[in-house]
Length: 203
Image 1: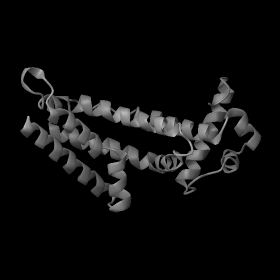
Image 2: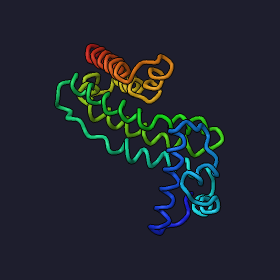
Image 3: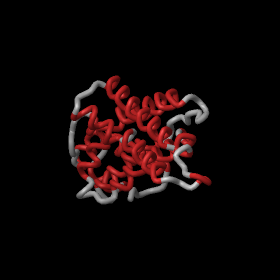
Image 4: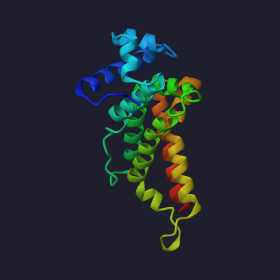
């Protein structure tokens, strides 16, 4: 865990975590603590004064990006037309993924040797899940069975929406299928619309 609770200590921790993010964004796949110290313009000794390990720096970097770019996503009016909600949801998440992608890829690559990282990365997944529940609540409710009982397709639709809007889905379209940012947003929009329309029809 990061050490120190003074404002000066927290500022130094943020500076060090931001240095890691910058290195990763510049193309350094697995920055060393020494590289982070050099980018932050601090001594290696100071890095380990504030952090117990490199893993702690990674975790703080992921959490800071989540707070800055994921937690701050604007709510979408759940009463607006479905197509409009889908377009705005995809636009917000795709724009966020463009920013956090380098750090997310690096953190995932290090997850096996840094076991606390999956939990830090999962915070964004939880935010996405809540976003989907609120934004598409009427469509999800429409797949409930008689008397309000939840039908199997309700849970299935929710999970499929999470998959369609996930970082993994976006990353595959961008890196494996090599789509542009615009085409990726269009593909995700079509996918989510198709899922919602199919779910409503089944309900």
